[in-house]
Amino acid sequence: MTGYCRTYFLLFLIFLTGCARLDPMGGGQINYDPAERQVDPSDVLVPEGFKVEVVARGLTFPTAVVENDEGQLFVTESGYAYGEVILPPKLYRVNTSGSTELIVEGTKNGPWTGITYHDGNFYVAEGGQMEGGKILRINANGAVDTLVSNLPSMGDHHTNGPAIKDNYIYFGQGTATNSAVVGPDNASFGWLYRKPEFHDIPCKDIVLKGINYTSKNPLTDAPDDKVTTGAYVPFGEATRKGQVIRGEIPCNGAIMRIPIDGGEPELVAWGLRNPYGMAFSSLGELFITENSYDVRGSRPVWGTGDVLWKIEDGTWYGWPDHNAGHEISHLKVPDKGAPKLLLEKYPNPPPQPVAKLGVHSSSNGMDISRNANFGFEGEVFIAQFGDMAPNVGKVIRPVGFKVVRVNPENGVVENFAINKGKGNGPATFLKTAGLERPVSVHFNEEGEALYIVDFGILTVSKEEGAKPREGTGVIWKITKE
Amino acid sequence: MGGRSVFLSVIIFVCMGCSSSKKEAYTVKPLADMTEEEQEGKVLFHKHCNSCHPNGTAGLGAPIVTTSVPGFLIQFQIRNGLGTMPAFSEEEISDEEVDKIVDYLKALIK
Image (cartoon, rainbow over the protein chains, first blue to last red):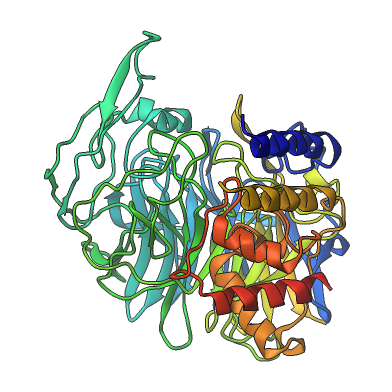
């Protein structure tokens, strides 16, 4: 050991014993057993001049709200939560008293991830964990039509959206995996046991470098059983250099659209890991949020922030070899090295994003301010569900658990609604009565009120995975005073 | 790693560790209250740094706005990286841009 190294080591020890507060403690889950949820608008910090109210509470995994032509509020309950909690998804009418009335109950094929309203009908993105994703049309009487089905949605990420423009329904379809290689992490999610043949499907033909990964085989009882798996193929199937994977529609990691009355999906954009939130601007531009890579599975990727994109038709956005327009091969996973690139050739140089958001923030549902009285006109409001550390990777302090606004002109991200008190995190972690896990935001028709849909308590641990708690979801409303 | 780099890394570590008990900042100065350099620094910070240090606080990375790290050490860390933080080359962030990011962070810490 050289003199410098010795000095460095000694000083580092002093640092660890004296000042150390930098240990990666993970998100809001370590040594944390949430108490019963309390709800108090005064525990939510918003800019001066804004008021916070509670619209409804006691919901089970709410994901999105929408209003009909009369301004009546409705909410979707997911029906599925990580942790393999599988319930019927539901659409409720939300009364001004905060009570709810059931409009329709879906089949156990959630999560219902989003809803929009158009010409007297609701349009719902059905995540499709069990049977594949769907876009549903629900009329005022609760009658359900399926406009498209069999979307490849039985993996890690689901069918998201939807948003409507020019008589087309746009929706997002997340990827099956973290970074294109099926691995033991997908068994932890649960789906690899149900669908061992499931894998990512590219939207157009791609050529592989033939990178393969050897992992434990959770599908057998033999403790030393190992398998080798490549990209875009089922678990246990290797790939070779130059191998062509044929593109198909529908595909994974994409924005697609169908005609308003249903029909075959058309490709809008691809190369997106989990395109979750979706909104059109007043100029007709499509903005989406993308949940970026986790540090998990056979091909973990470290240090990639979620992304806000403005979508250009026909463009590939970089997954599985890029994040926010840059190759991921320089991002070294601690103790594991950097991920190898998978594709021989890129469909196009990936574009640059509108904004980069917090690593593991789980930046989900979004909407765009369009009312000068509310303020921040043209800015994109994003609900950040919050990290699921340590299962997505470690963080020094909790990330997300709030609503941010983004100026699309310069990519600056500002807090809009956060929990009061010292530090950041879900309310039960901070022992307050504020935001828990915001999953979507929605401006009312006039644009004068912002609804925040708060999924409720969901804790994560290495030992038990995700543990969502039923009956803890809340709808908040923010208006100008 | 040279001796100078080791020394500076240690100083950065100690500065970050010792200051982490300060109250984290959640409200930042509006752009309009900043100098032109600070405003440009803010935009650059959000382009290159905000993902790991959301609004300058701790996230994947350590807090910045609650630390006592001097400007020249922030410049050093951006160029050389530290721990799991990658180094940023002059092609990614020019020297002039690094200076503006430091100006912005100093304005936040004030």
